[in-house]
Image 1 (cartoon, rainbow, N blue to C red):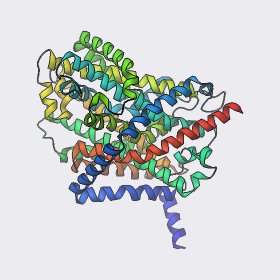
Image 2: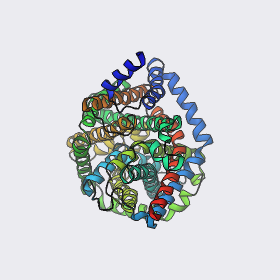
Image 3: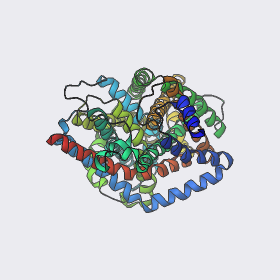
Image 4: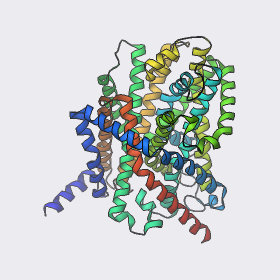
Length: 512
């Protein structure tokens, strides 16, 4: 009787669709980190360091091979006859316009991280390249080739490996929008109801939480650095925590309004503002240098894509490979459950070929142009005008963007616009993730009771915000990076099962 009454209270509070085993399993994995970080941030930081050393030391090869394999499989599916299969009925039109679709998938998959690293990463590789002398024109070109490699097709192929199966099985076969349901074609019709299926969905939530809090923390650190540049505010963990609390309240509000309202509108706003900022750099910055840099870097990226994708140690620099490329591959894997699920949700009516080719090629190209504007201007200022951009970045990587803005016209306006852009991407990434986590923990179903669905979203939004605050106090950016790698690793095995299940089902569909 007591158990029945408890189940009834849970159903009224968080919805009858709630999968209690998945929900409590994810809570059981997450809350200890919040408690430990709250009482002993040093202990959490030390534990994260140990996990990072183990994973990057022993399994870096697995990340590198996996993400390159994902690119090959995606391209193979796109050009095969299987690419003609539609994610929905044969006569079904896309649910969203192309612009809305692109804006939402880009905002969920890249936004906040790209604004953070768009100027910082090229600047770091320019100053301290993995090979050769830093601070030279050749180092500048290499810096962007590396950036394109890290933010290019490997990232989006990783998202496709999760998103395409979820879209196919949900819209073509009518299965629930969960990772476990996507594996039923491979592991049996009732796999999602088993303990193994529950574990898969818990791992999807776990990877999503740790991947997203990495970006939430980065966004808070960058907003803080922008405010510290433009106001008397002093950068500190307390200030970053306060920013996270404020933004958490905003993204919970956005997520509660649903995809068609809050998330879609914010995503369109993000892309429009991002384009405006990018055009400003190409107009007021060294546009000739930027265009030349972009062309040469893109040509170098395409020429070296296969050699870089097939090496387990890049540039004969093992420490650099583990610290940069392996981190990025782990970060994309950590983001894959939520970005993949979100892209799947907005891709109804697309064909397999359109889904793969657009997701694989269009967002990376936009990212490349954006990063060239920001990072190229920063490098030009340091290399040609001898402004202290590099020294500022070496002192604090979070200031790369705002130190660059300080030497451009309309500095005050730019600081406001870029902080708004960061905050808006912060909100759209987090509200997309919160929406997906809520669906993962309710068996992939929309809530029958909107109020209960909102409460579930609020719960997971608070968890995301609390964990981001804890990690800020446990070691800042390093703790955030460590969390993403630790959260990603178990889900990498699930992604191989998703590919096998998808290919089996697509072949069966094509031959039917």
